[in-house]
Length: 241
View 1 (cartoon, one colour):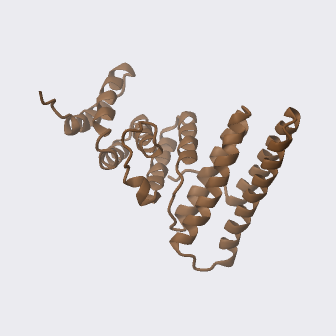
View 2 (tube, one colour):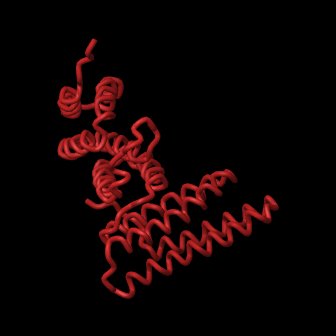
View 3 (cartoon, rainbow, N blue to C red):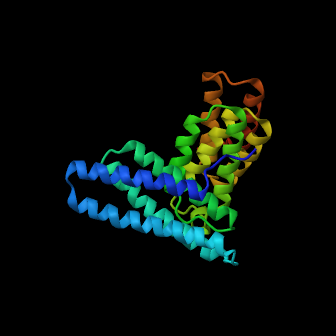
């Protein structure tokens, strides 16, 4: 089952409404300089939609780097708007903008592009994960998060700054592990847990250790506990004194 995401056309319509709401919020505050910034940035975002829709309409052979650059451009503009919404405490608008990042990411993935900006995507996925309760949807979300991880650029996957616990690559893979656990689906759990070990070899032991304590606290089914125990045993390294 695939995660249902809105189309690029519907995403643009949603963006137009969000842009109007952000501009109205700035007018209400009397922030003239911010109004000018928003107008410029909203125009740039609409230009991104023009370019992305043009790619699809032209049906030309765009190489992966072209798609990656276009997606990065759209995501970088979204980041600016998300920051502005957050600054003005426009939480509904901020979350709406974050969800649009999933549409851009999916657009890039379907055209074999790479993801170079991950943070707004990770925030949107976390928001979505908090809303989803049904098993098939959790499985679909875990699969989509895997597609996001696979599409990340090599610079993100290399995960150099392991000291930063809040880095988007870490959060993406940890949250995917949590979503898989919540699905109670053995195949999904095994697939995601194995990927987690490969993606975050330094963080995986802590995830499974914490997972073991959650098994008891949240009274998970025995099948889920057995799989968590299996991966905990794989990664539990004895301390050397």
